[in-house]
Length: 220
Image (cartoon, rainbow, N blue to C red):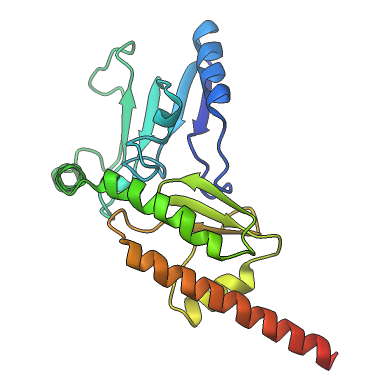
């Protein structure tokens, strides 16, 4: 039996995502040809996109969902969710470190905090704020992703910008297979004040790089 494995939002791949039309067509084709649809929600799951799973933005259902990362808020844990059409049985899934009581306790605690502190509401609120705040930075040509799984794209290689941000501004951003993209994955508890700090640091860093490049051109 064949399968399709896809991320609701790409992670290291560059924060690209398919359209709702694409995902719904994919679901129909998989059902038509009895192909298993597997959603990799390892990075985009657990509320990071503003919904519990990123593929829920497209109103589709997966046959299998892969989980990890956000499940334990840093504590190592991973999981698999399967459709009721599969018959679960003991020994079906092999694992070396599976069944850890501590990992399961961490996983339950994370779910309790997400619910009690309404973190998904915070994700959507901060996301909307970020989209407005980033307009202050004219060098940004596109914002990719959803919620707090974001990519800020420029028309130049951002390696120098990333280095300046972390060394001088003490703000860490991730990289991606797109060399022009800053990958931004803050904690789900982040507040708007931290977004303001990021925007100021980003504007300052861009200005400092521009001044430095102009000075180098004059010297040349």
